[in-house]
Length: 159
Image 1: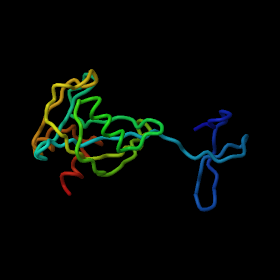
Image 2: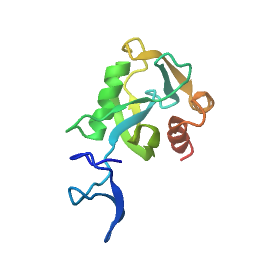
Image 3: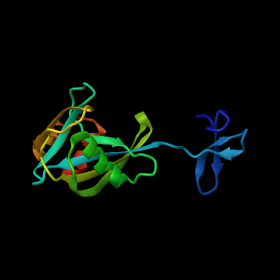
Image 4: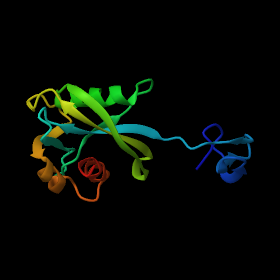
């Protein structure tokens, strides 16, 4: 890890009440880690009996709708916006489920569950290869196994 200001390689240094924190010897300052923030959504049908799973980027795997949170935007707004942009659906309820750090992309993922106002999937945008409603049991079986999406979905379904 390198200093965002001068490019010097950071070393870990103890900071009272914080522990080991990356430190720039040249700048003489601690550099707390930064990361991206994104949201993913468990989208339920209006009757709450089905879950929406999507396929994207030419991959044959079912995942949840997700997207990055823009600067100045709150997570709840980003979740509703991403569903509207990608799927063409508005949501009537939106609730926090859980969060998890995703190391591969250095992203804090915030997961929500929500209820769509419609089950019409005819307005998906160019980012979506396929979108389909699954019963709760089918969603459990068809989400890509071993993924963060599966972890979020199972945490929701098992509550």
